[in-house]
Image (cartoon, rainbow, N blue to C red; front, top):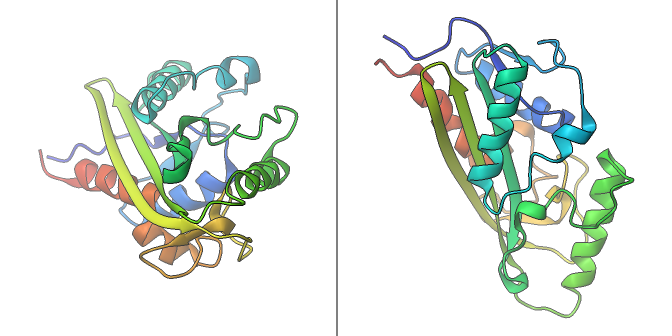
Length: 210
């Protein structure tokens, strides 16, 4: 017997970049998904922005999964928290990755640009550019909760390369691929990215006989 939910899995994110990656990834495993909009979960910016206040990716991912699970009528839900850890910066920005620049007035590509500019400034005179992306996917349904963690190593370049991806992808040179995540195709990135690895574990667990 499979653990796959009878109803579509709710992808609990407002990020278009994440939806672009995760929808096809899970579909390839035979897992049907819907967005928060599809599920009729109206956006509440004040509440949703305050969910990620914990010190670990695991706690933040679980907080989002629990919140949207309740708001979506207690249907199977998955949320993730992900971020970039730079060794020379004491593993910053970490759980503050999305809002590292401090620009709460920005979103989407404008926010990405501000975050990348801060990254380049912080590393301007630092030779050690080693970094890793981390993603924790949190799944919740009536039977309980599960978390899955994925990591991907690389280094930060001194100038962006590529036009794909989102976030810090143009600066992150993947050890596995030899190109930045912004230069890689969606399929290439999916095979080695932190998010691809975390959600591949989730998909394998959901599809396994129980």
